[in-house]
Amino acid sequence: MKRDLENLGLAEVRDWVFDLDNTIYPANSSLFPRVAERMTDFIMAHFNLARAEAAEMKTRLFRTYGTTMHGLMKEHNMSPDAFLAYVHEIDLSDVHYDGVLDKSIASLPGRKHIYTNGTIRHAERILEAFGIRQHFEVIFDIVASNHIPKPNPAPYQIFVNQSKLNPKSCLMIEDMARNLEPAAAMGMKTVWLANDHDWAANGKDEAYVHYISADLKSFLAEIDQANHP
Image (cartoon, rainbow, N blue to C red; front, side, top):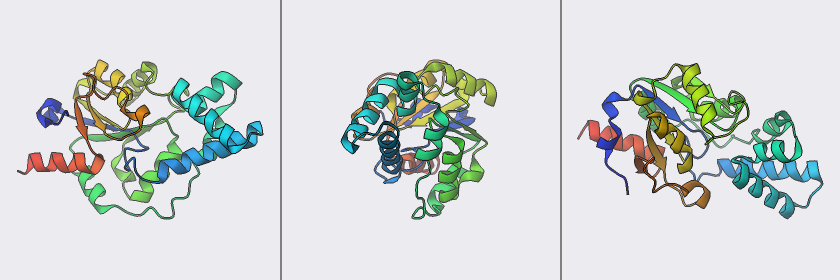
């Protein structure tokens, strides 16, 4: 287990790059399954499939292409707009202000960014529900990525260029370990938030994962403890 904070060189971090889904909130939350459920609904309606067939198609496309949407674009020449708009309109009525998360993110020095395979609207809804939208200077989404999902390296470079980042002073936090590989190759420090899904753990033992924590709030607490022993 990679649990040595000294490997991250936190004193040099000037930009904090956060994934959104299963990162801002824990992977065991019910939020991303709500998105996945709507993906299945969309595929059922569009292709006139039974639910089990639609769910299998969703999963296959995700595992093959990085996102289900990218698979639909590649295999079915589908425009992404309707899909993205539908699947991200999840119910957030049970998501409330998180004071601990608000305070912990606020305490990080430097700029904070979201880099997500979702949309800006989805990111803003999640961040506003938790009461932390004000901390993030940039939301770089799948549209800004030219609909190319992580871990393809090309949009990472677009993100860095547009946000005027020095990768060597960035730290990236992700729930999918393989998405950290391009970031580390650019010089970023990386943190994987552990979970049991095989697709998320793929690559967790590779050198491009510099630190592992249980979830975002645990990682931020570990930083606080290191700074105030």
